[in-house]
Length: 170
Image 1: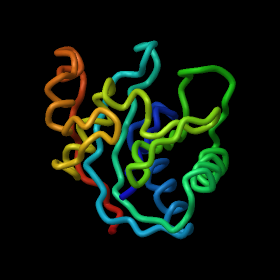
Image 2 (image 1 turned 90 degrees about the vertical axis):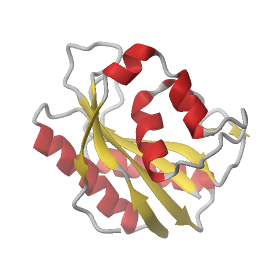
Image 3 (image 1 turned 45 degrees about the horizontal axis):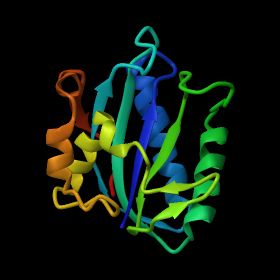
Image 4 (image 1 turned 180 degrees about the horizontal axis):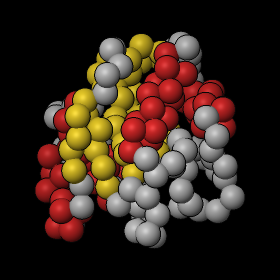
C-alpha cells in the first residue's frame, strides 16, 4: 500500500485550502492509481513560523503500478500545476504532496527517501495515517502507528484539530 499526506496553507481561506487538496486528489486519480481510503481533514499551525496560515492536511491510502521515483515525479508535477513555488524551505504553499510509505520500500536517494524520514515527528501525518490504517507499521523502526502516536510530544497533540471528511468519493 502507498500512503500520501496532502497539505495546503495557501491561500489563508480554509475552504480554498480544502479545494486545493481536493484538486490534488482529482489529479492523482488521473494517474494509474486506485484510492482506497481518504482520512478526515486535520488543521495544524504552520511550522516553523506559526504566523503563516494554518495547514490543512489529510492522508490517502492507495495503490499504483508506477515505480516510486516515477510516482514522485508525477506528484511534483501536480504540485507545480496547482501553483506550488519552491523558493525556500517551509514557506507557505498551495499544495504539498508527501509520500509517507510506498509499499514498505526503503529508499535513500538524493531526491527520494522512503519511508518519509520525519513522519514519526509530525502530528499531521500520524493522526490521519492512524485514522485510515490503525495497524500500520513503520518499515524501518518496526513501530506500530499507535506507538508513534503515543511518542508524539504533548504539544503536538494539543496543536491538531480533526475537521470533517473530504467530499471526494473513493
